Length: 98
Image (cartoon, rainbow, N blue to C red; front, top):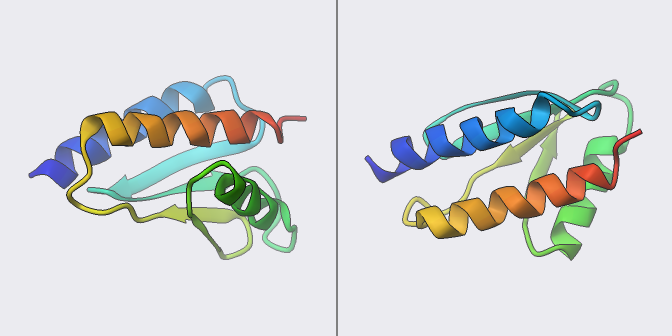
């Protein structure tokens, strides 16, 4: 139940950012297993570079299929922790905006 509620919140908060973003084209997922699609080719290293920067900023994520970044947080996380993660993600993505 917690993962469903927090997953919806995650997608909703990131969707607000995506409306004004040129670097991310989509957020998708189910429960707390979510992904963002980077607006670049699968052959690019943009998603990898974003994941490295996310790590420097305190959040671990994994690139997949070249231009997709997966997020798989603990299922016991709180709303406050989730919003902190969203803040780290949006702050980091803004560094990559063109």
